[in-house]
Amino acid sequence: MQTSARSICLFCGSRTGSNPAYAEGARELGSQVAARGHRLVYGAGDRGLMGEAARAAQTAGGAVTGVIPKHLVDMEVGKKDLDDYVVVETMHERKMLMFQRSDAVVTLPGGPGTLDELIEVLTWRQLGLHSRPVVLINVAGYWDPLLTLLDHSISHGFADASFRDYLTDVADAVSAIDHIEEVLAAR
Image (tube, rainbow, N blue to C red; front, side, top):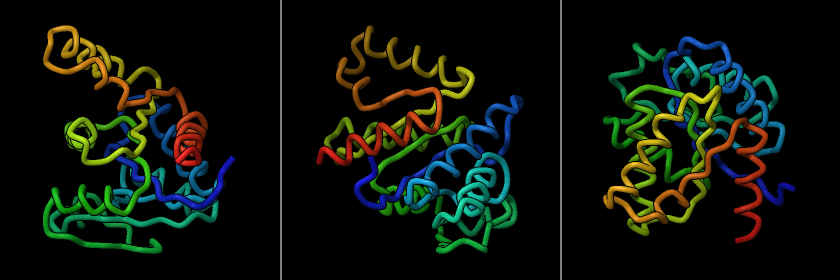
């Protein structure tokens, strides 16, 4: 269904986590992004789910852009063999540049940094600063507690019910890319 190449921002862990399904989900996403002719934009690390997704996209012949703050180049093992490797000063600059260079956002399992990235992008959406699709790949139910918390915030009056509409949760990469292509094609 793809109509033109898009750039897809990926937020995910710099670790692989405890369940092998997380790494498989990252590889599936990287492969799907590339197979459908899109560009992967991610945090430029060669470790964890970030590295899994980037290597899979490259193996499938896809274009990959990485953005990393200079203080994480060694810690996250900056992946310099990308089509576009950008070193920035701060974490905020990384997040903003990744977002600016993308047409949609996908989130895989990750830790506090991944959660920060997702919540900020959702907040920007709630404030009307963008209308890009934001998709959560809920590999093996990893994000179930977050989805429950978002619903809890809504039920207690701290967010409008419409907030939940800004986030599409799916089980796998194929569904994520299908959704993104459908939304973007309708624009």
